[in-house]
Structures are given as structure tokens and as C-alpha cells.
Length: 402
Image (cartoon, rainbow, N blue to C red; front, side):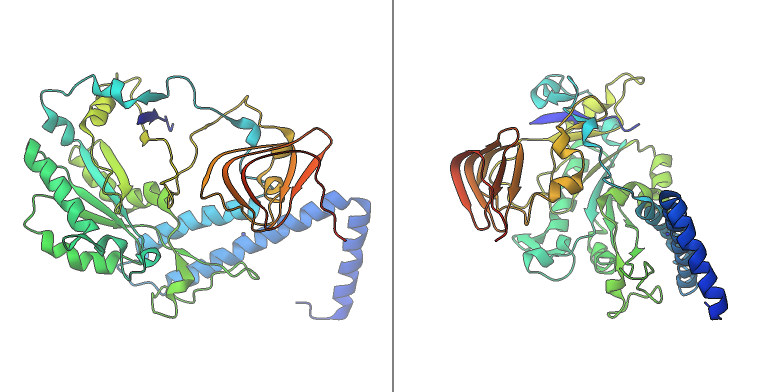
């Protein structure tokens, strides 16, 4: 187990008006195709953005008075996201800027543990709040309702066990660590009904809602929703924007300011169904014992991924800055994806090396150790339905349309 420190510092009325306009556009395109097309695209983008702003204002007029302010803040975030979507010209990641994390940014847990703990652990804990991401439903587990309300052991739910963990921490060290739940519009109502049963537990529980963004039509690029309601017919017209929304929604809720006023300095963030993610006093001490000018803003606990990690959404640790090249073939994500007719089944894969001009057909399965190397000037096409297990593929293998 290792600890990674990452410093975060969108009517033509008469034909005698219409046709001259067409002719003028054609002349512009002939004389300067790039400039003409760029001007057209920019006008189109501005029209999409203006239309979106108009539709969002219409939606806000249908919001409940108690929800109008937070909905307006949500829409401010959505406007920025929609603007980025319209401005997108190519891949969002420049692969030439990706490199390994710098030396010293990942520290072994054992090294941190050796520092020991301060005499007054409660003082450190009182500066901490535990935030659990509670926006997901239990559909992937075959259950209805919030995932946090699924019974896990001895009729205890994920939420029950989480409350017990934090209560134990507070009792053991005479501390005041609150539990903060980031709900979504999918889970908020059901969760709040359940929270009443924890009234007499030694845990203060706060909630705030993840942002609610409107789904847009592929054709018009306008919201599908006609009002702010969450009726059965209308709920599919909205979506929660993901875990990265925690920073904006936490701030917009007003709860962040409240916790800061109570002396909280750090938050511990994990999924509600990750019962193994608990407050580690050694990591907390590592954070708080750093000199003020070198204090980390963000620390992540990471561990090696194994074949047992089937349902894991974690990614590879890397630094996105400069200098490290990953090859001219991989400059863009889109170019990379063109090499796959479908994503290969790699569930039982231990090691994979792919080098050179390689493409994959549909429903390819890779197991064990697979090495595929196309020499310079050669190309390897892995055929559809192929199953490679502990194989080395090299040379030239072209599959052409008949």
C-alpha cells in the first residue's frame, strides 16, 4: 500500500431573400474555405449557446421557490460544461504531456506509519469530516433504491455500518467527526427518511445534493426536460454529473462554509459502499504534520490492482505535465480508439504489451501474457473473435476486405 501526494493547486420569409444569401456564402467558401467555415461554425456555436441559455431560464421558472437558488447554481456549472462541449476541437488529453509521477510523490505507507501518532489524536480528528458519496442506486447489484440502503451483514446496510464506524472513532478518541452524505436526486428522498433512526448515535450527519444537469437532445442540443419536476416521465431527462462534482456542489450547498466555521480543515472522501475505506490516523497525521509551506492539498491512498479487482473504476497513476512521449501513433484518443472495433475481453489478462501498427477486430479475448509487436512498416490485424492466451504475435498480419 502506498500514499500518493498530489498538489491540486452552445425564417426565410421570401425566396428573393434566401437565394442571394446562398450565393454569397458560396463565394465566401470558394475564396476562403477555412475562414468561411470557421465563421459559420462560430455563429452556429453562439446560436447553440444562446438557445441553451433561453431554455435554461424557461426551466428555472418551473422550479419550486425553495429549490430555485440551488438549481440556478447547478445551471451555472452546466453552462460551463456545455460551453466546453461546443468548443471541443479534438482530444481533451495531450498524450505528449503524460509521464510517470515524480520521484517522492508516492510514499510507502510503512514509512508514514513509522512516524507514530501524536499524543492528542482527538485534536486532529476534530479538524476532519468524513464525506461519503451516496448518489448511486443499487441497480448493478439487482436492487432497487439507494445502494447505501442495501443489507450487507446481519441486516446492517452500508449506511448502518458507516455510521457505526464513525461512531466508534468518536467514542474511542472523544472526538467530533461528522458524517457528510453527498446524495443525488435519485437517492436524497429515501436517504433522508432513513437518517431519523440515527438521532441518538454519536455522529452528526449532514447531507447535500450532487448537482442536477439536464440531458440534451442529440439533434437540437437543447434540454429534453420541459420542467424542473422529477416525475416518472421526467426523471430520465436529468443526470448527476459524476463524483468530480463534489467540489462545486459542496461549495454551492453552503455546508462547506459551515464546516470551516466549526474548525474543520480536511475531508475524507470515499464511496458509501467501500467499507474498507476508513479514516487512517497515520495518514491524517502525515497530512497535518507537514510544514505549512509544504502541506499537501490532496492525498490519495493507492494500491496495486489485481485480478480480483473485477468491478473497479480506478485508473493508472500518472503525471500530466510535459516531456514524456508515448509515440506518434497515440497522439489522440480518437486515433487510438479507431484501432478497436470493440474493446477486447481482458478480464483474465495478467500482462499486455502492444507495439507498432496494431488493430483489433470485434470480440477479441486476451488472457495471461500477450505480447503483440508489429515491426516498423508492418501491420498486425487481430481478427474478430480471436482468443490469444499466453501468445507472442509479431511480424506482419493484414486482413483485407474481400
